[in-house]
Amino acid sequence: MSQGTALDRVRELLNPALLDLAGQESTANGYLDLLGEEPAASPVQWLMRSGFLPGIYERIWRPTVLGAMKGPFGPGTSQELALVGRMLELGPGDQVLDVACGPGNVTRALAGNVGPAGLAVGLDASATMLARAVRDTRTRGLDNVGYVRGDAVDLPFLPGSFDAIACLAALYLFEHPFEALAGMARTLRPGGRIAVMTTRRVPYGGPLNALVGVASGVRLFGDEEVVEALTGLGFSGVRHRAYGLVQFVNGRLV
Ligand SMILES: C[S@@+](CC[C@H](N)C(=O)[O-])C[C@H]1O[C@@H](n2cnc3c(N)ncnc32)[C@H](O)[C@@H]1O
Image 1 (tube, rainbow, N blue to C red):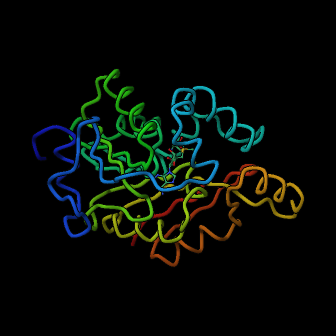
Image 2: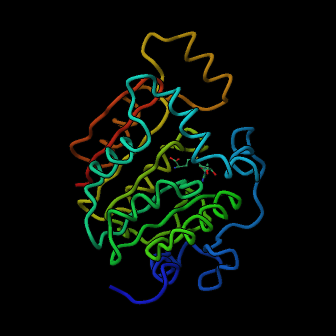
């Protein structure tokens, strides 16, 4: 295991071929910043980038909004994190990537599963989310966590860098979600695990699907869509769990 800070360890995983700024990425804000100016955003993306949402995201926004979407029988936050931990089969020393990590709430939970020799990397495009992630991670004294400001659809890591990847509550925000999944598959080592949690189009829920889709502006995925995408990318044992308007899909790269 290499020595150095978490950011030093994250830097070793970056793919120099994909980076204009290889070796010169800014770390002034406590994360590796690989993006320049933020491009124009949809209303939901704008909210994610605002200074307001990161402050209330973990304690208020996520439990309320996702809780309502999961419905009364869906897992609460701690059950969900335990479920994702089991899906990813993390152990001491593993390297895990949290794609679209927001304020690092999931990243920090995953860090607890990989121990001090392991590494949890959170990637997000939002500077305000990452500022909060860095702050809350420092407060908790975690030194096996590092953050990258980058694009989930164009992951900047060397192929096979990670033992496991989580992408929770974010796939529906990406402009090209299936390209993003393909990038995650490339970034996993053979035998690596993936866990995706995203929106769901309720079967026979025509008006409800339309209402949620139009009101939020986010994409709702059919029950087969992510399963088929992961199977097509070479994942085995792909399993689907549905709770209301939310679905979890996991698998292992062959
Ligand atoms: C709802 S938060 C999810 C945070 C965390 N994964 C969770 O489960 O609570 C969605 C995050 O996706 C990020 N995001 C959206 N599109 C992105 C992209 N193309 N690249 C990187 N991050 C993106 C947003 O900035 C936001 O922080």
